[in-house]
Image 1: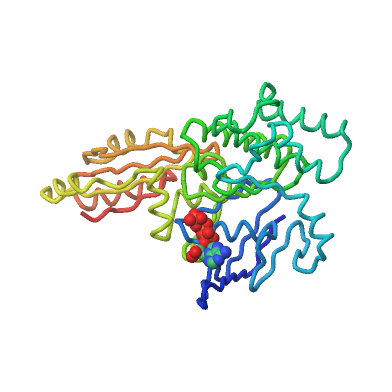
Image 2: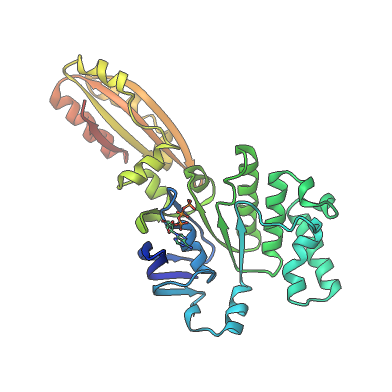
Length: 339
Ligand SMILES: Nc1ncnc2c1ncn2[C@@H]1O[C@H](COP(=O)(O)OP(=O)(O)OP(=O)(O)O)[C@@H](O)[C@H]1O
């Protein structure tokens, strides 16, 4: 659907070269909600702007639905771009036009008939929950409503891809949630593939099925959201994941544990069904150990429960080893934490 092959992008400014992207490859399948996350300056905006050819790569290939955009003449490129809608952090609405007219802009540019424009805009106003705002001006709308207008405008030409550039960064958490729900609905009901860039892991958690983590122009980790959240490898990914899944033991607790020899600490990870199994109960019944749950947390990602637990086990060394092996046999990942 969208393929970036070994993309390089260098900006030249005041005699200086800035390498915004360095060998980025990624593949977005039809139906994906693909999230790209990274700190400021990682290269996310540059990357998403390459997909609809607002930027051209210095090296590498961009394929959208198999089409090599670099080889297209301007007319072909315009036709290809019709399949791609885009929404922005600051909405980019025309203040002098009503909501209806803002949504109609892409259709007017394509010289569609009045009737067609009326029908399509009316449908989109309904879909985005803006029926009563058709005659309002952007300055009369809340941030969430403005973004709904931006979304309706992006959908006007029936695109197959929707690109979202920090679409919820200017919104409060509740409004963010409702906009993300709308994006999910667009993905499901209109079967539109979505690519979203963000610096908030909560956005990835709420709607994406796949994620790529960027740092300094490179993708440092990518995969299914559940896999990346469950086992983040790179320290930057780990720190993003920690913003939504708190699984580290506070230093003050670690300090008290140091004074207790013979006790060992483990981090457990439960995925899906194992999260609801009474494993700790079985553990205490089977082995001569004491178990102390220091921390436990459950998160839902892609309709799957991901649980983490910090468990302190007290008993004989070999018995604790057996208990740990039992936990593994129950399909739970376990890792000893050094204190
Ligand atoms: N038009 C440009 N001219 C020169 N340098 C640019 C240009 N656009 C981006 N850059 C540089 O490329 C790098 C990546 O920028 P980019 O905006 O893609 O990052 P980002 O991850 O989207 O960051 P942010 O979240 O702050 O927007 C930065 O060092 C930036 O200064």
